[in-house]
Length: 75
Image (cartoon, rainbow, N blue to C red; front, side, top):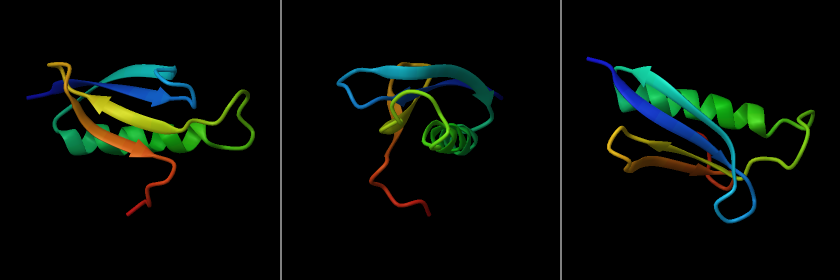
């Protein structure tokens, strides 16, 4: 069964959402991987505007289930 997750790429200002997308996937791991790929693209030097500071995944109930900042190490 697929679930809808909302991914938000956050900017440096408090509450600034640079990008928001919705994805349907079978589990949180799929949404997490998609969020990390989107975050990596938002941080490339060629991108216009300010680089992204964090990314978060929100489940269908509105709860934040994953959060990643530019200071976290990629595993």
